Image (tube, rainbow, N blue to C red; front, side, top):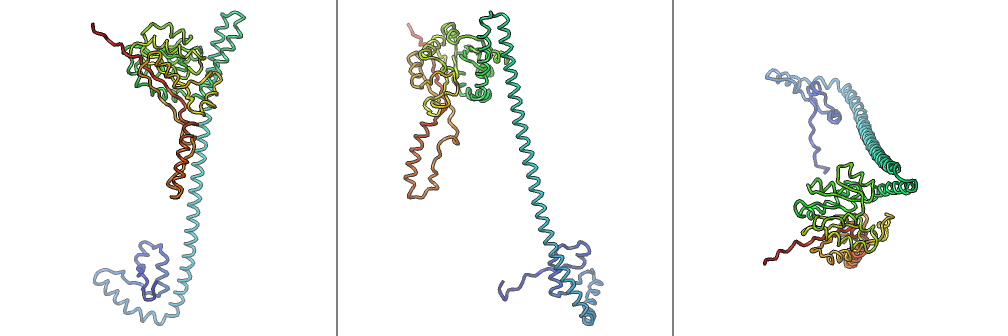
Length: 404
């Protein structure tokens, strides 16, 4: 503050204000007593009130002068008392802030504990649900095996029990690593634009229908469909959901279909289980069974990703060999499908891919080098990661009508 600058004016608290609504600003009272400012006498209204105020102002010097010593003592006492009150008020404010902080911390801690407990209960519920499903599936597999044992010769008992154990193990493998039914359903939905264009009234055959995700999707879309699977347990799961599924051999079922009778043939993550030479036969049998305009959809893990081909693919011990998209496309074309389209599916999440240099944070003289590093990163990242699956979609050409 400059030497000639006057301090800001403060309004003295009126006595009536204190009596009506006590002020909490102790600094106003301290200013009043420290500067020995006169108390305002604006406590009367009307003409008579103003005369009373004028009379009090006239008498004030006469009363104050003989009592100056007492007045100074009272003023000093009031100032000391006000300093203590102000200091106590500051301490109270400090304690109040600390209490508010502790209350907020306590409240946040309680909410965090509640969120943690909710998360624990949610995980416990998920595990309980999972164990219930496993027990249900195990009981179902056991019941199915026992039903077969009742009429089977003694020599087939071991084979039936071994198959039941194997099917239960594969069901659990699918549940853990392939994805939930909801996730699979969402992935299969990408093929609906092709499946909705099959010949009207024609049905779709799902080879290796598994838990029946595609059959359920087609049913919801009003497209007739049936499935076949070599696993009795998978077929039982489909039938529990009211889906049309039968236990059987994929090639036998496809070969037994009437020529030109199907609107679509689909198979998701099955062809990687087939031995060499069987895939070409499957494609040709599908072409024979499809109506003109029908579609063949095959989905499999993508070997174009080194991470898939070298690691993820072999997580399933029943996988035989990866299928290259170009060789599969050639099989489609040689069988007569036209057009043939490839869909790259399920890109790896960004957090699992190689990091990229943010050019905006790089000094100008280093940006050219950083850009080259990013381009090299893109090539390596695409080779390592890319997409996890690919789907091949082929359509049997419509019949060309000739005019005589």
